[in-house]
Image 1 (tube, rainbow, N blue to C red):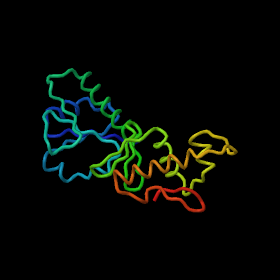
Image 2: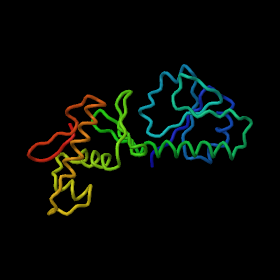
Image 3: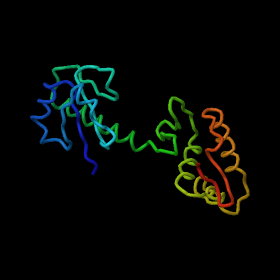
Image 4: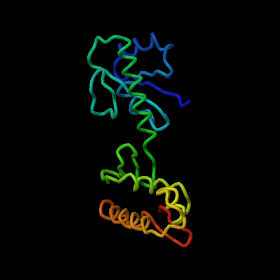
Amino acid sequence: MIKKTLFVYNSLNLFNIINEIKENFYFELEYIDTKSHKKINFEKYKNYLIISTRFDEKIKNCTIIDNLPIKISKLVEIINLNFLKKQFQAQSEHKITKYTLDLNSRKISFENKSLNLTEKESDLILFINSHKRADLKTIQKTVWGHSNDLETHTVETHIYRLRKKMIKNFEDHNFIKHDQDGYFIN
């Protein structure tokens, strides 16, 4: 199981409350302030949550608990729900070369641009990305459920349209390539 870490930001009272009951939780607890926040490399934490009692624009993805006083059971519920949301979100995001594919929203994004995809386009990207080379018949069978002897241009048409969308939105002329061994993502 991936270790969870709860960071309490600039709220010593909230930290002390949670620290008193932390043996009932399945996460590590750490207090951070403005200075220590800048020094922490959050990338090394697989599953973390930051909570605070007030908004700070420097802190990204922080859960604000501002309706104090709060029942302990409600506080625990908020923490657990936010850990679940982060886990669900992390499971839905896939790195495809320089892009991020979000299966929940069916969007592929890079920097500040994003592109809406159909379910089949998402499936197609995931399948091709998971193989070094994906041949036409394997894609037809796996992604569309077509038999190998069926003559159709469904795959080629979808790839053609997907390439056009990638060119239009990201100016990427090399996203899905093809050679004698099959399709691949470059």
